[in-house]
Length: 260
Image (tube, rainbow, N blue to C red; front, side, top):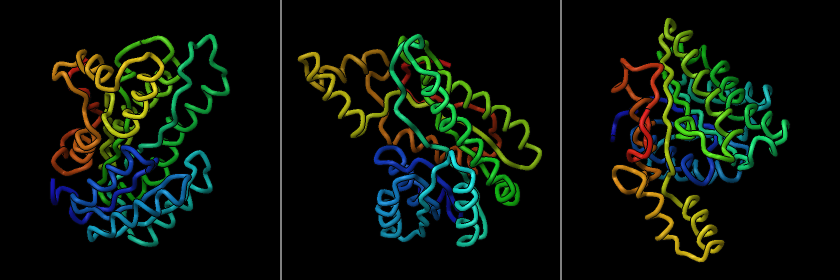
């Protein structure tokens, strides 16, 4: 995907140790300059150093996207450095409660929606003038949880379903201003975070990581799990001009585990 984002400025929220870092690397490799946002400043400073090492510019701005003043500062810093923004990737994520809804507090549900939905909306609103000027693109990172109703995923599904509905509405509302809004819905993402989770499960149930992987992957058509790079490829595609005729869409990346 070299050159797909050449000359573009990409803002990524939720730049943590997993998909967010992979996204930053892949966008830089595709030719983009980056604005990296997360609450953990040390982490985004490290990722910014990785980006500059491959010859692209990177601005790291510690940002809590649930705070309006901090989002305004993020926009001001980005525009001051680059003067334009072409792509916004809403990737902020919090581990769900993993409890039945009957045992999930309303405060936890509020926090999930505040970050996942209202945080993404706050960023999109704030960057709309810049995106309209550049004819830009918004990519919201969703989840395959919108495709099923498994026990203990209720609060997570509520938040991600609201994010999908918001994305579709924004595509309709921002389309006349030249802004495309799309979603990517990954399944399990094979990377260090999932490996750690599988290791925990293996210890809990007296099995191995390999056995848990095989059991999980058996439910997919390809009999494997998508990698962080494969999910990032889908996001880069929707961020790029290759998808210039696509808006309001949701692209599933789950190796065929669920069908939309």
